[in-house]
Amino acid sequence: MTTTDPETSTATACDIDVDAIRLSGLLIRSVEGQHRVAIQALVEERTILALPQVRTAIVAERRGRKACNWEGLTGMLYTLPLDRPQRIFLGLLLSMVGIGSTPLSAVADLDHERLRIFTQAILRLAGSDSIAIGTRL
Image (cartoon, rainbow, N blue to C red; front, side, top):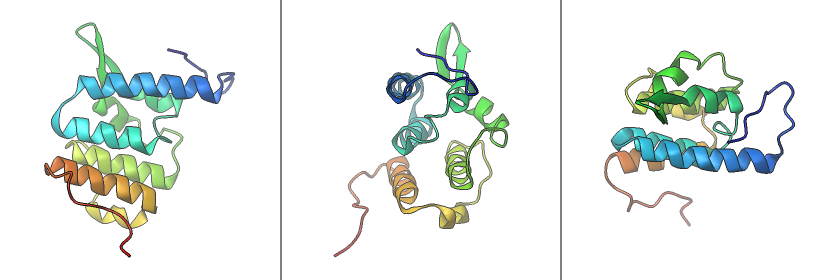
């Protein structure tokens, strides 16, 4: 995996995308249930996981294997270089896994794409992927 220093980064967008794709697979395989639903939403959102600081915070070594570390991410939530909508989205995902305390009313501050992703995550959590989400004609 390519590691980059955010201040002296020379990695290309392609390198970052490859790293994010590899990390996405690793994270999804390392968790189950509500944690997997939250990781899938984080992967689909893309911009948050594209940040090297987030990738560093969310990965932990457990029993010699890399795994998802929601607790580490929670501890760094306000020190990560996230804009307000990203922080709200991540806070909602942390609440989904039982760690965060972002109220559900925060969805009012999400843009359409993040709202769609979060709504689909809630449906997956409830065990229903069959409800369509989108613009009605």
